[in-house]
Image (cartoon, rainbow, N blue to C red; front, side, top):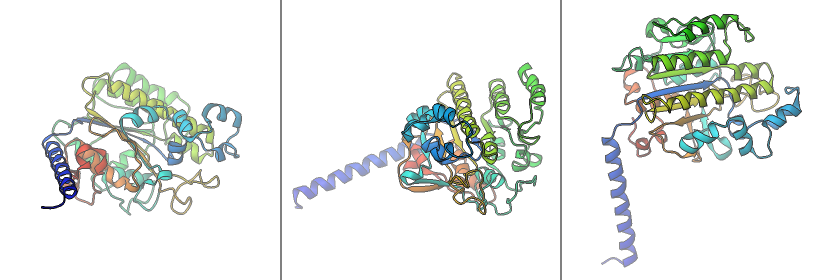
Length: 381
């Protein structure tokens, strides 16, 4: 007979194995609760601000004109306090009940897998699930790749229930609306939808009266938010994507106070969307929220304005956050490792019970296992 301590150890391992197997079997038998998905991107928002809050080196640089005002609004000696000040929703609701990826200070890394580190390649990667080297420009080329949103739009119960609102005008090409038939409202396009409310009709008029501070290709984020919010309340889409852009615009302009302000504004918009979802029975406890960016930007005072492989080293560094009924409430992910944006498409598809990878007709990254309970046990495709 083996020594008693060895018997006890063996029994403990056996009991643990049985428990894990039981959980795995229950998870396999149980469908995910997610029935709807809201995806929100903040163009070119650095992981540094997400995890460290306002950057003292940039506050004290030539890129901040009223240093005292910015310090009063966004500064604290503690990085954890600063990030809560800048992103109160992200560091309350999401940190308490969801997951945040990409804090490189603790070894948890998130990156784009494409080699360009700018917008079109970044959005292509998120929604097609792979870094196509042909998508290497921000020009209005039509994307030949099948994307997640058009795939979802063809699934039973999702037909004409997928909607996209973006501040940047390029999304009709990124999502190939001529082929996909997706409802995409981008830049200063008028929205055309059957039976539109008076508010949506008014927003069509208002956007042309508002100052085009960002030029004619990029709409102000507050207008994009108002369109998306009003559409959500009237048409109740199953999948909603909102693409904000002003963080990138303010970064390129070298205006750090406005960059922080637009990030803070986007956090408030996201909170308002989430709070509405929690008051509507069609969405409450049935909706997963994904928040991320398309690329990072330079991590030094001399490079933060820009991004791109030849311009700003480390601008492939990104982040993302998840909040929903199928996501373990881990908060800030502390496990050392790396995730890629090419994995988000299959992750989102899995949450809704679909396999985009099998249907895309091209390479698609594997789902991120830790995003759902089932995937923690290796059950994801």
